[in-house]
Length: 216
Image (cartoon, rainbow, N blue to C red; front, side, top):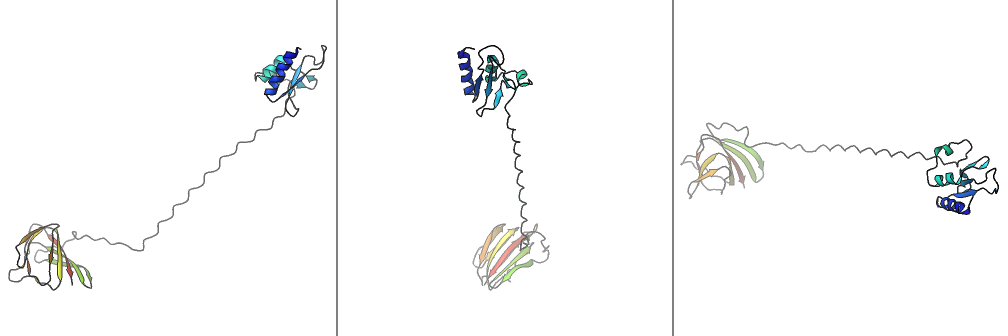
């Protein structure tokens, strides 16, 4: 075969990391004009069988171009390089289980909630007084009125200062040496100890709810 063919195939084989084996017979017969391919370690890859070289220049070129026919690879006389078995793909690691949420600690204190505007006594005949808190120097009470007033000749006089808040309803209030004032829900008044004062009127159509804080 012309040297240029052999040189071409050898260059192509080199680019593929292979080594071209060419027949050394100069006369027809045997493996005259045949080629084969070995890998870098000298193991047969293509065109080599038990009788020697067996592939033509065209077949080697097709193989190097990646288009060799399956017929050659399946022929009984061909010897192919042993390929390392492909390693089995590694299994994905199992997801870590999510930690269980820690149970919330039970509170040591149970909060008791009460409402000053529910469960009101009727207070039809007289004002209703409910003590909410009593500590040294302070006393808190709820007062429910419904149409009551303080007699003019019997004013209220206390030994403690008093802060009073009207939570609900409506009322009139007069403090000694002052004019009468009208109180609506949310209004609050300070009454000094020893001051005479009068509740001049309270709403009759609905309860009037007071929060009174007495301070020593």
